[in-house]
Length: 249
Ligand code: PXP
Image 1 (cartoon, rainbow, N blue to C red):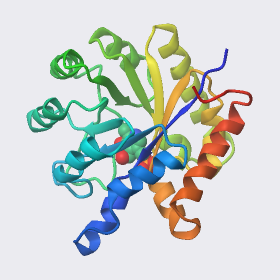
Image 2 (cartoon, helix red, strand yellow):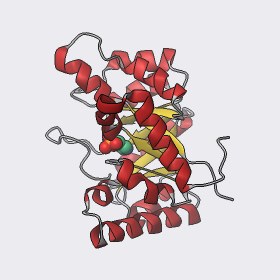
Image 3 (tube, rainbow, N blue to C red):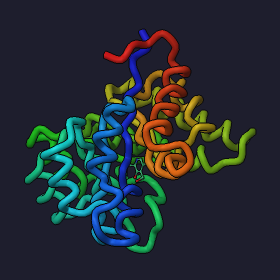
Image 4 (tube, rainbow, N blue to C red):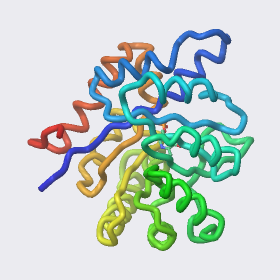
């Protein structure tokens, strides 16, 4: 049976807009509350070392005042581990982080970083937090995730979304669907995200072994033209169209 595909809405760039002027507007918490009304299943926010978008007080407020489960994206550092253990969000997604990057450029090297990542996965998991690892769609990272006890991987969809429509995008889609199938086969839940827009969401949503999509930047940009609620509603509609007949649980 095909299962429901969850939509995690990444609100980082609501905070980016706010930070451009300082002050409190637009408020990421308000975006999170409206996302719940528009059909989101969770909120995702990336607390970066430099706090360029979401800040510590946003995490405080999202934990205390948003009804949706929070997926905290963070680097595997001691500072972030302490913050995550203090808040115990529903989920943590461990991502690589470089100071000079504009956005998360690639996946975690789980295979090469097993020793470092193992403790983060264990400590967070032991605190009741669902841990996912953001990876490029490669079997060796999925198997390494399993080996260090991570229950979830999130596949980086940037290469697929950035590829020109046609053969290039098709081969990236094949990589994603093979990786998702491999994750399911070895008992790892599979999520996907990065760069997803209206024109790229359908084929990803149609990969039935993917349980959750995390989408942010495109939705915030589209909201400028059609409004936040409408942007989310239409994304949800496109996801549902890729899995006909599946009810929200
Ligand atoms: N998933 C992860 C792990 C990410 O790092 C990001 C970007 O912060 C996203 C999903 C969302 O990507 P986008 O903002 O391009 O939709």
